[in-house]
Length: 443
Ligand code: PXG
Image (tube, rainbow, N blue to C red):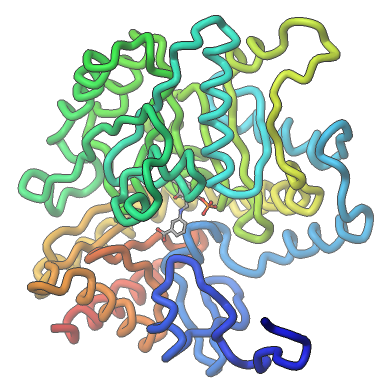
């Protein structure tokens, strides 16, 4: 058993069990980031690393925004923490008003959590409780999608559709089904924006409904654009079809906008971009520009109102977190909204998107590049897997990029990117030229 005299040395990496990382491989050659400003990280070797992935899809307004830092500092001085249950504070009240005015349609209420995973589990629980409250208690099934990522809670893992994220964890939640994913290289490789092919895949929802009966299904959860799995762009008309099938059968539609929210597609949310309003919407990441953990679930009035029934001393939803609407997170989110307005970042994202599109598609023709796809300020380059060694080629490209001063995300044999929305045209050019060199140098 450890005792006080056997503490590990301060500089060893061993005690730190890193998430979603090959720990032993990483610790043999660690990459340590020590500071960040604008479009760049600085690592412990003093190297500047251009950030093509907004950290992990979250630092949409660029790193080290003074307004956000100052707001966090000021809030910490005034009040560090307020109980989330039975007490409010000005930041949570103001943020709720500002967020709900930004949310699309009648998503007029907001519930706070601390991560995308918690937001997803919150949304799933609200959907289940909503049907039960309305006397429709048989509606307990949840439908996700293959290759979907909805975080790592048991609920999110269950509706998620990435095999590696599921297979080690037993049966997960009962009563889950999955739509097919929409990716098909032979039909849509090198499409710019939304593919023409694949709309019919939404009709699989009818098949799933026929199998289980609509009366047993609570909600469908999908990412409008699947991010983590490598930027899968919805076929034209696909999301519209999913929305109309849900409406027809009284099934709630949850958009998981943890990645697509806060300007990633130019509009505030993908729901705005595609012109489809979900019943619930999960957001996180860009909400505080990645500075303080926070997530928010947007809820439509009809759902909220159905909870606000019965005696008014009864707690309507037995759910919440110690840090729901944490004062520092609220301060960071409010300052992030200010930064978005001051820098006109939604419009900037829209202006950059065609530049990004032509830049990323210029990599077509490089060896081993089998697909390039993009929408808004998201993009992915898919590589031919090495024979018998899937993922190793993209990992080698990831490492080569880092050595050349560029941070990308690698998922499977895909390089995924989502630059901060403050990127200049020249920086987009630099991202693509370094990635191109790395691909060319990797066998
Ligand atoms: N939903 C979606 C759509 C996400 O992308 C989550 C939920 C979970 O969020 P938290 O905050 O619990 O991690 C996510 C998270 C990557 C990557 O590079 C993506 C995520 C997280 C970390 C890495 O693909 N997405």
